[in-house]
Image 1 (cartoon, rainbow, N blue to C red):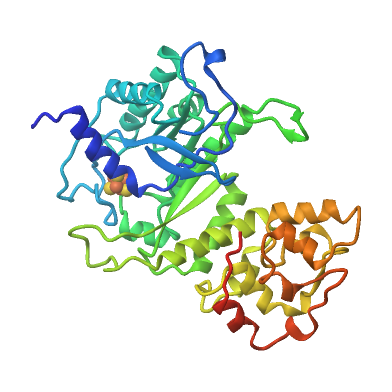
Image 2 (image 1 turned 60 degrees about the vertical axis):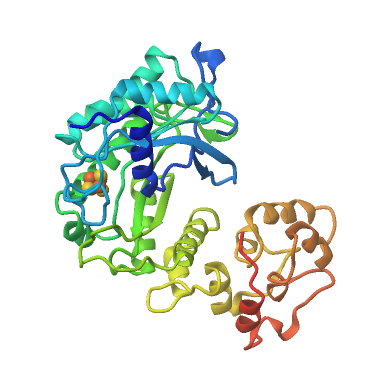
Length: 411
Ligand code: SF4
């Protein structure tokens, strides 16, 4: 076998990792070198740029341990039948790269995934060894995100959670039927079992008590677990996708579901589409996901705003819902409960909280809302203020067309 240089391996294995979207480093505990006695901190920001839900940009060394894989998932460029150049890092090489990049301030942490070498247990053990060596030997205090290999032994998953800030087990596809058709060696039940096991262990590790009114973070994988779903590789519509996400959030306490638009790969199977889905579809799914997590929307309310199970690509899902439920509006910004103000197009969570705080002191005018929201065009048809009522604008039959031509983004 040809010996590859470390930099060549890095080029291959970082490129191969680009298909995984699930690496935002939000929500972990504070850890810094003054406490670990080594290097690294999970605070601040840091070769893969990801955006946390709060908008913070973070950088991670995002690599695969190897792009060899004994499985043959047909949507994956690293499948066993693929003709790509293969490479493999040793555990020590990943540790060295992480430390070197960290010291040069290139990164804030490590996102490590892998193709399946020999068996799930063997692969997970190697990944755990990377994290353990960083934490125990080098007292590394930076962020670590490990990809979970389903079917690996429960003890390995628990140990992974001991060293990693976040664990993620990819659900891969929106339905079990699609997964069985496109990834025959992967078992949907094994993926769910891994998620359930991790969640159970995380909860067992949670200290009693609260901090600032919130439950204390778990000791295992304190930044929680996430997953990734590939969009557009199968026929699942947005309603199916979002219902799957809702069940993952409620069933396994997931922190995030990442949506990754399918991108065509070389020499792909005729069972895969030739073209990727519109990028706007992925964007709309993320917006819908936010509505479920932060805006109090139920999945059925969101999908009812689309057509034939697909979200409207021309308007964001919150506006689609408002246009389909005009009888709920206009909402009086001086009286409406917070949860109803969250349903007004153009008002994000922070703006709603500012409105609720400000109206305790004086009745808010349209200009007050405009000053807090930054722009008022999208909001105006759906609210009343001290000096504003939209009249017939809310029920205007041409409102959707006006909003489309003047579309302002939701968040
Ligand atoms: S197990 Fe992962 S790396 Fe291997 S073929 Fe499937 S998706 Fe690709």
